[in-house]
Length: 308
Ligand code: CP
Ligand code: NVA
Image (cartoon, protein in one colour):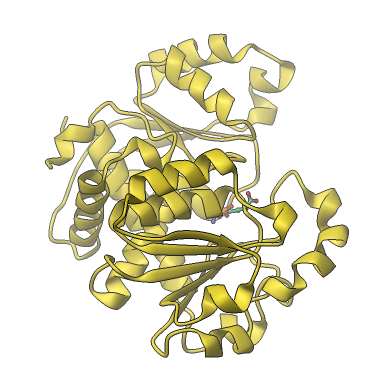
């Protein structure tokens, strides 16, 4: 696939990409990271974020600056968005100014509305349902470590949230097995699970379980995320005891493959979903993972914007 194939498209869900498109994006990210290809653009990216962000905001901005483009940080509290301007109006106006727009919000529906009323590419920079840009960086990190993706097993432990959803779709697309271990009431969205199973076909296994040890057993990747996502802060105290058995700690790491890597999308609540020991230990690839947000998103920007 040529990167031109993605020109003008939206990325609202990882399932908007097919297997060859994901693998081509990873190839381009590898080449950009190694300085083997240089891409220049003079386009403008808007960042419309309704939730806090460190990595996504900074990595998208740096990626765009390194490509020669510009970024406008559309803080929702200082735009008319905070005064209730209808999304269908904001979307059509921003479409006239910007070349590409990354949105972080709550409802996936808001992203769909932006995409419907805009011609420019709309990127999901995290919703309650998905975090596809994160998972492109995660796959790049796993590929770097193992030299490939197909046939590997990722165990996700914790809340069946946006990151879990995109991981299920991403792993299904690249031929990885996924085991998602959550408390029974916190399983991933059933529609996403069905979609992941459909994408995986009979190539790989998508397993939902409430048994963390069974999930971690022999896995090549242990992955966790916060137990209470943005917007769920009030539930944190109630959730901690429920999720405690799913903590990524040395005991679970001992059950995994001896070469296993540990990933966390960050920010982490050390001592809750992951111990300090594991986060700082030799299996942790968390800092490379965070760096790869930059390279994966640069590849995405180059591909969605196409050549000038
Ligand atoms: N992982 C991630 O998306 O981090 P931020 O919330 O800091 O952007
Ligand atoms: N699940 C987390 C991911 C943060 C990057 C959240 O939505 O807050």
